Amino acid sequence: MNPGDLKQRLTFQKPAGGTNDNGFPITEPIKYKAVWGALKTLRGNQFYAAAAGMRKGEVAALQWSDINFKDKTVTINNTLDFQAISDDELFGDPKTFRSKRTISLTNNTINQLKDHLKWQNKNKQNLNDIYRHDLNLVFCREDGYIMPKSSLFNAYGRILKQAGIRSLPIHSLRHTHAVLQLEAGAEIKFIQERLGHGSYQITADVYSHISKRLDEQAMTKYEEYFNQITGVKND
Image: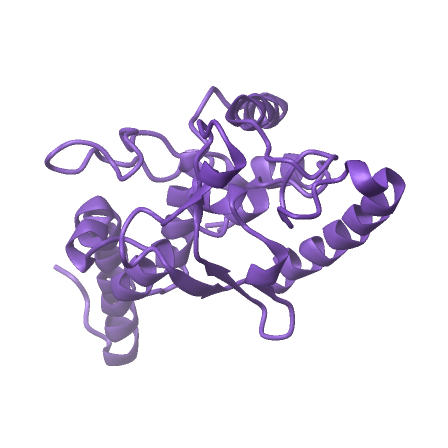
């Protein structure tokens, strides 16, 4: 199975007790390879970080001081209030006490961020005093101010349309990241810490069906290998 293509892949189940931690039922996979191809056509967009398992508010609040290029990490300290009526109200604490965290980034994401920073620095020079240097945002409008939520939704809708996928919430990238991590062999505890879930149980409940399926696949592979080396045949 190609880990880069989620076509006809896992069907998320709605966890007992309601919805996921962003209010959306987990009901649909996305064709990740096609989406990723569409993402790469955009300049410095928020969806790269969302694809690393971050919430959209956490992504929108990222400042360059949160990025450690040497260690290839990002530290999540804040979340953005898209409905703030003043600059003083833009940034707030993340959703849970475990949401403040430092997570590693892939080489590809780091390289994308470096390219984005170079482009942004040129833009800062061109706009000079017009640019919102004080916010120091990683992902923002060309003038350095926050990206409206409507712009994010519209941009993601265009990405999905380009990839031939029906409408999905941006949060689907966060869940897809978790599934890919699980398929790559990551433990539930690691996923919990990476996503910033308030407890291990939340993560285990949301992705329990994925873990069960992977466990069944692992046992099938083990049995096939065991039978191969011992000569045992199934009845």
